[in-house]
Length: 539
Image (cartoon, rainbow, N blue to C red; front, side):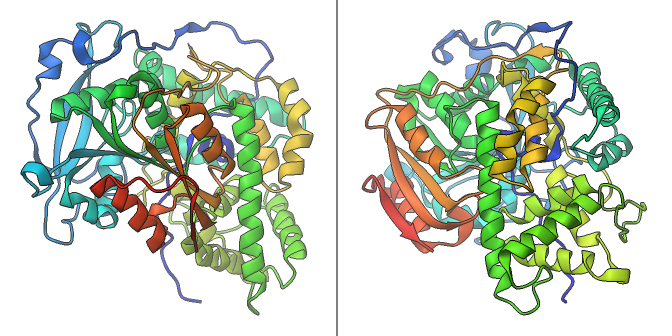
């Protein structure tokens, strides 16, 4: 079988990465003590309450430096767009606390590729958020810039590292060696001893976050980042925010629309988060979503004579479950230069990473073929996939992806679950997915040790009076299940959300290569052509 390097991470929405990686999971005692003040919200309606020193900034755009380890692999250094256009980087200064706009500030890393359009041909800047939460837009937009090159006909393409991410004072909770141990550890405790071990491990993680970024943690809410978007809009010189949000980026966009409905310009939400549920609802929906994607993969794999799991999809799933269960006691050797083994947790992450896109399925087949090769079994490919999900760079350093994800999730979410909550919910999770249900159920304890109280139960995205927002949902999306598209539409309010359905697989439709989706989105963003609500594109 041809050896290829697995792809880099596709950014997960807020629940998924936490659920599968258990980065924010915590097996703690039911009661939580020593809480710090609640995460800071927003008390303002626009940039008019901000000092001119912030709203009148003249950003110093210059050639981008190679990504720092906190942002991503330096092999993802910004490459020119197909027409040779270069990327520029700058730092925006924003209030750390929007309720104290004259107080401390935070620097937000930004990237752009300028449009050559002038006059009426130029619409403005198109801001991107690629999800996570915790993904570096400064790395991701240039890495996928060719996919958005058409949009540069009328927009500057702009993205950023959200507060607490990458180059924007990214949160780092543990050192690289400790993160290796953390991600490799058993995510599903079977007895009291294992629950204590998980509790201790995740308590250390939360303590590390507080030690390294305690003053920052209360200010990492999605609400604060939405206010950062509005400041970017102002500084970039646009009357309206033109926006492209993917995965968690759709939640961020919804919160922006709620805060500033009259400031919404042309906006696309792709891979739409369900804004109506709590953490448990989201995790349960994702368990079902990944089960759906797994079933689709197994059916395709079974059609090939060389499928490593066999020719019957039901038997194949049973064999996969047995393989994963076996890794709990017997990790698999790999060719990792640091001697790391493929553990159950790392294999779970690897399988999940590969289910994000049909383009990744061959990597999963290759990884399973290697891992099920008897005496020659090797877990290298599945380990590489798991590392991509975890934000591990090839040199063994880590991005801030998972630490930032945890910090943002816990600043946002008010709910703190208990062990009894997990036990009560376990049957539902196992029914949703025998493979992904248990780790996602245990992830409900994610913020129990967190030193900052969360802001809300779920985001408010009601945006009466906002311009039409194009909502793109994929029927086979594992990470943001398709049902969330309709719920976002209902939550936005009458005459705001316009649904576009892609009948296919994968997390996010625009980059999936479907010409119908891409042309419909481009016509909306470039020409203002709003499609008929309920338009469907087929694979």
